[in-house]
Image (cartoon, rainbow, N blue to C red; front, side, top):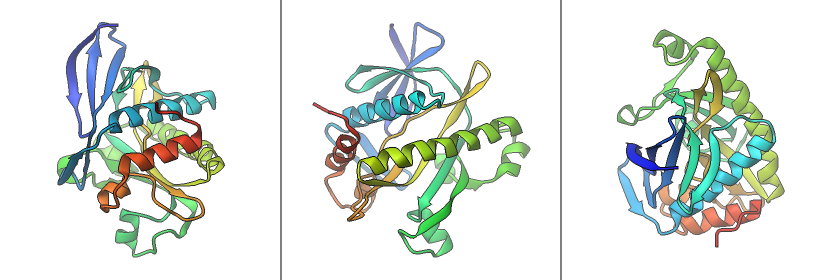
Length: 237
C-alpha cells in the first residue's frame, strides 16, 4: 500500500490517502491538546501508545460484532482504516458524572449515571463542539433518522462491551465519545478509541488514567495511558 498526500490534520492525528480508494492511513502524533487547542504540548511515545491502544480496542469490538473502520496496524504510529463518509457528530455516553456534565448540571463528580446518558455534539472546534439533539441533526441534514438510530444502538452496544473489558482490568469506564461514518452504505465506527477520548478511573482509588491528567496538570499522562493499556493486556515495547 502506497501512502500519499495528507488529507486532514487534526489535533492528535493526520489522515493520509493511499493508492487504494477505499483505504486511509491514520498517523497518531505525539501532540496533545485541551480546551479547544488552548493548551498544547508534545508527549514522547503518545502517538505509539494511542495507536496500539486504539488497535486493541477496535479489534475487541470487532470480535464482539461491532463494525469498525480499523483494518491493521501499519507501524508504531500508523494504522490502515477503511475510508468513511464521516458524520459531523460525536456520540457521548456517560456512566459516571465527570467533566462538562458536572459543570452544566451542577452534579457531583463521580456519582453513578444510571441509566447511562447519551448526548450528541456537533464536531466543530471553532464553535466548541456544541451539544445538539436529533432535531438539529435532521433539520440541518447532518445524518438521516435511520443512521442516527444506528449510531445510538452501536454506541450503547460498545458501552456494554467496554465497561466489562475495563472492569476486568480493575478500571471504570467513566465516559467516552465515538464517531461514525458510512462505508458502502453501512454505518460503522470510525475515528479512534483511546484515553484521549474517554475517561478511565482506577476502580478502587479512582485515580485518573486518561487525558484529564493533561487537562488538570496531574502529570504522567502517557505513563497513565500505558498503565490502562497494560491492565487490558496490551504491550507497548
